[in-house]
Length: 231
Image 1 (cartoon, rainbow, N blue to C red):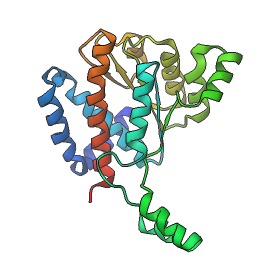
Image 2 (image 1 turned 90 degrees about the horizontal axis):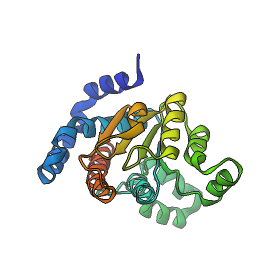
Image 3 (image 1 turned 90 degrees about the vertical axis):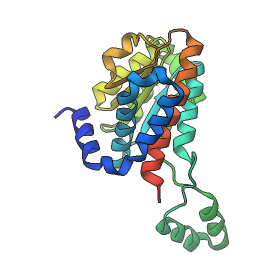
Image 4 (image 1 turned 120 degrees about the vertical axis):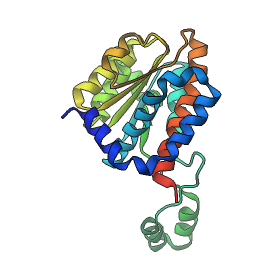
């Protein structure tokens, strides 16, 4: 059975747990009416990320320039509390205190549960090695080849949908059995061919595409956080 079909079935079975996601998307669409045609895709993207995390997997994110900054932004919302305080579970709290007493109490009080995510733009030493030894267009594909495992999820961000290093990462991700989410401008570009879910916002100018992508990925991160960390 295709992986995306499994995601859909999983989502139907547990959809009651992410009913809050509807109100988050409703609010997004209310503020940005022209995103209405993308409603189902935004919901599917959130479900796919939840599916991946439920399977014990991780999220990889990549993009260039402003899209690189967006990659880091997404990782920041996933790896620590976004709008909710994600207290450590009691088991982890006990282990920290047992290991180091008062320092363990400080760690337990301040640390938060994270959802594992990696920005592929963040590792300068590795990036320079790949550029020097292999070529600049392989910077993300090589990392997907190394980090990626079946069931992981890759978010590729490109306003045109044609950034070759992002496209190559999507190709490798598909070959390795990752779920792929493409975030692009209206045309979708080459990334259309390699995205299980394509969120192509209705703009073509780079800065306008980026202005719409931010509230979209904020909504997705809110839904994912609500699923895992609501009381």
